[in-house]
Amino acid sequence: MALHELVLRIDLDRVEALSDALVDELDALSVSVEDADAGTEAEQPLFGEPGMPPPSPAWQRSTVRALFETEQAADQAAAVLLAQDWADAFALLALEPVADADWVRLTQSQFDPVPIAPGFWIVPSWHAPPEDATRVIRLDPGLAFGTGTHPTTRMCLQWIAANAHPWPRVLDYGCGSGILAIGAALHGANGIDAVDIDDAAVQATRDNAIANGVSLNAGRPEAATGIYPLVLANILATPLKLLAPLLSGHVAPGGHLVLAGILERQADELKAAYAPWIALEVSARDDGWILMTGTRHP
Image (tube, rainbow, N blue to C red; front, top):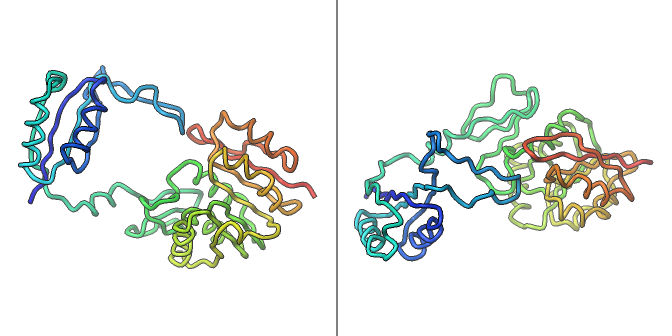
């Protein structure tokens, strides 16, 4: 049975109410909102600072697309909406069947291998590695906890590639998918501890390590013990500030601390938080995010 789509056009002040009604009261399977003027001179980009809400919640004129399981459900939703006393606030543009598709194949086609450094790639499981790939992390986009497409993850992996070393111990704090720990392993690291407060992240790290043929120890934060020549943490600025004494204490004399999940405007806050132990510097920037690194003096 084909899905059916209800397409409406509505002004800014009614977008949220319409979307809520479609999902909460009219049983839409999904609702998407697009700029009704996209591709024209009236197109209105909504850009905000990374990690912050956009300056406007929607466009002046929006196209709302609601997906329903049956034509009857879409018809009924349209009838209910047109009966509302605010029906003059929107226009019903279409009610039409949605063509059948191989959604898995369609989704996969949107994700290509991600280049990190010369010869170093993140490659989805359904792709063959590029010809020049000498190091490959197999990780599928869409999985939780980080897949290499975000600037913070890329910058951490690029630092690992540029500073490759047979580190005898590495700590990946807040490991998520385990991508940084796996990247370190592929660049010669040993004795890798990958820890996270989320049990699902710990399991994902274990699974991804097996899939990539690397050895590491994944567990809760208490599994991190002693000092490490390399400590990695890609979280967010607030928890990184709170963790400053803990993370700094895990860095061996002469060892490196690599922090990400930080916006450019937060650099001074992080420098101040870590100043008693390590002098942090901004070592990379990407799309509003920064990588901060430092060395613990002997």
